[in-house]
Image 1 (cartoon, helix red, strand yellow):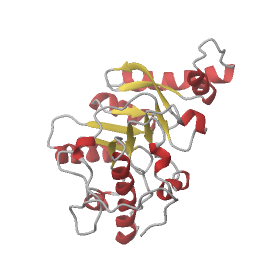
Image 2: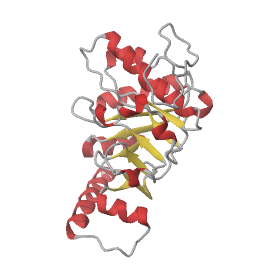
Image 3: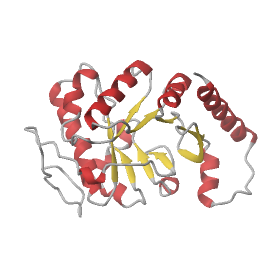
Image 4: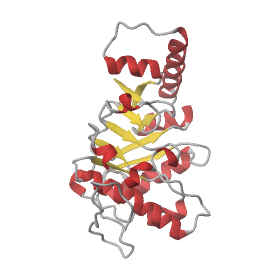
Length: 255
C-alpha cells in the first residue's frame, strides 16, 4: 500500500509480468503531440494550466508530488503525457530499477483512467531496456527519450530501432528532448520530433515535417497564455528567441 492524499484511489492495475508492473491500455497510446507542449516543473502554475502535452525530463524532485497525488495532472486540460522519467543509472540496483519502472508505469496507467494518452519513456541505460519495457504492450507506437552527453545520437538511434521493433510498424511517434544541434539534425533526417532542452511550447509552424519552432522565453509564454499578441517583447526576450530559431535552422539545414 502506498501513501496517497485523501480522495486519491490506491489502485492495483492488471499486469502481464511477475513483478506486477501495470499493463498500459493500448487504446490510449498517443498518436500526436498536442500543442502546447510543457515541461513539468519549469513554468508557473498558470502556464502549466494551458498545457495539452506534458513531459517530465527534469529533476525527479520536481514531479515527486505526483506519486502521492497523481490527480494533479488529471486536473489539467492535458490530453497527452510522456511518462515520468525517474533517474536510473548504469550501476543502479535492479530492485531500484523495477521500483522506478513501477512508479512511472503506475502513474501513466492511472492517468489513462482520465483519458490521457501516453508516450512511453525509454530514456534508460541499455542494460535495463527489458525491465523498462515491462507493462508496455507489443505494438505500442509512441515513445520519448532525452538527448544529453550520456545519450548521444548513436544511443538515441539504437533506442529508436528498438522501439520500432517493439511496435512492429514502419513508423512510430518518437520524441527527443534536448541534445543540441547534432541531435536536432538527426531528428530532422529521421523524421523524429525534437524539442530543445529549454523549450516549453511548440509553435504551430513545422520544419521538414519533424522539427518545430520553439518559443522559450517565459515572458513570451505568459504573453501567449494571456492572448495578448500586442504585448511588446523585451530586447533580451527577442535575443533568446532568435538564438533558438537560428539553432533550429542550422539543424534543419544539415544533411
